[in-house]
Figure 1 (cartoon, rainbow, N blue to C red):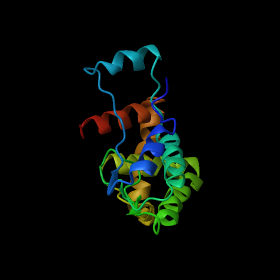
Figure 2 (figure 1 turned 90 degrees about the vertical axis):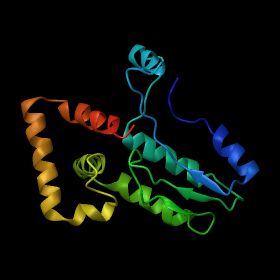
Figure 3 (figure 1 turned 180 degrees about the vertical axis):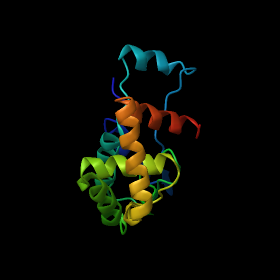
Figure 4 (figure 1 turned 90 degrees about the horizontal axis):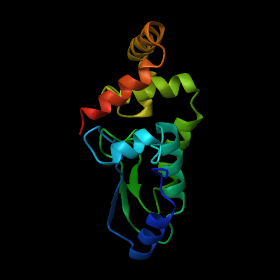
Length: 161
């Protein structure tokens, strides 16, 4: 089983036309019952890029509703996904497309900056001093222990639960 949706949520929301849709990213901690399924591979948590693509698909298929969509929690990668349907739908999709179009290195720097609470929007990547500091930290971590960046980003998310 994957953590991602299968379209049922979208279908229900299209039917009920809620006033508000708030996005939340799932983080499973070791003390949670679901953690055993994650460890065994019975439940697969998606990575940030896959979650962004899934949210894009989700929003793109919301039709005929006038809901406000908000991605306003530190657990969510793209805080800028925010707006009223249907008029802001394309704006929200452009934010996601902009992130997904970044080279892998820039996506990783953004993810690290976001998870550390330094970045709040994709425009924050333009701050060269901060970008260089985060990039250098990532390189140092990977040089000392390959694979450590993803572990570190996961631990950063745990502090927000």
